[in-house]
Length: 81
Length: 257
Image (cartoon, rainbow over all chains, first blue to last red; front, side, top):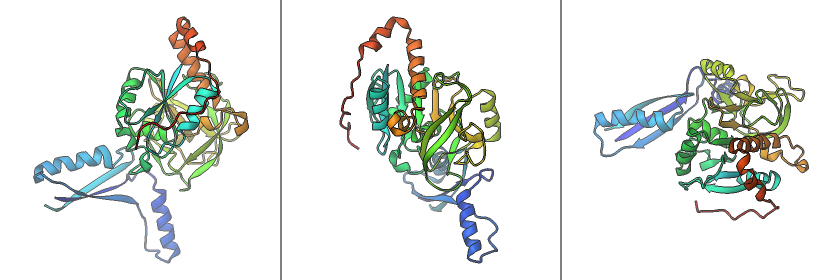
């Protein structure tokens, strides 16, 4: 089973890297870019789990290790069952 | 007193810390390899600076799963003295031994420079040798030192006087400019509620000898030694005196990666 987990800073936390990227895009003339938030992508392959079990394990992994819940939030999707 | 300096793969201030504790402060010091399960009877654990596990994922995020960290958590839980310097501070945050988290520096630059910090609370095991308001000159060297905590936690930290050091200018004034990494409330050093675990971004071990331009870092180590000696009581003080330090070559690195 292939899973993609997205981790990014919470809205309440300033993201200077995202701001720098936005400013660079403005410099290039992409003034339509209103905001940029930078994050991390994890592609994980799971085995030996059915869907229900995976749906329990994935957020656990994200919350305990991949994201720091104080500053980051995460979302996830199952790419291939 | 017996100090233990934890060595993670990627630690790079372990030898400096060892040197200062043993040769400058005159304390018995041992290295504790990250794979060890035993703190070898130390009175205090120091998590040194560096880039443990290459800072992969987040600074300090992987180190907290080391076998030695299980012991450090137990040790801290039973009131043992733990000091985390720079990456050590980041590890303490990730391990949940201190509250909050670190963000990238506000200017997105790795900062390696001398800074001034002000002692906000000298009634701690890590700052009693200084006085409140005293300005120390100690270097920093980090990318992720921009301390973050949600507003309710910050007010709680202030209320409990858990902020031990704040970035300031040379006369002790706080300003946005002096707060080089953008930390919330200019926080440079933080203690847990119980008062036995301290994390700080500046490196006291790099400011403990005249030849390095500042000896202010000794205030932190001196405070810890005073605290431990007091805690142990006068009865066993002789044992401390019996350890006569000489400038010894550092032991070879232990263990394998």
